[in-house]
Amino acid sequence: MNDPDNERVIDRIDRKLGRAWSRIGGTLFALIGLAMLASALGSGDIAGHWPLLIGAAVMFALARLAFRSRLALSELLDDGPPGLRGR
Image (cartoon, rainbow, N blue to C red):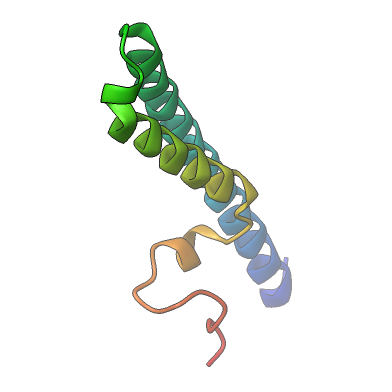
């Protein structure tokens, strides 16, 4: 394998690891959202637990964003904003 082939393989592995990392994070956010929602709905008074409902909605929104992420792992763990890798 020559150098461009190695670079493509590394980029492909990097994207797959980033996607797996995002799926793990999305799953955790969804599980936390489900736990918050079950806690709010399990109590008799839903009106008294509105912060849990808002928290569950935020967790579900974060899970949706994480599941839709297609960034590579090096872009997820970088200090700067994503998409500026070549600059």
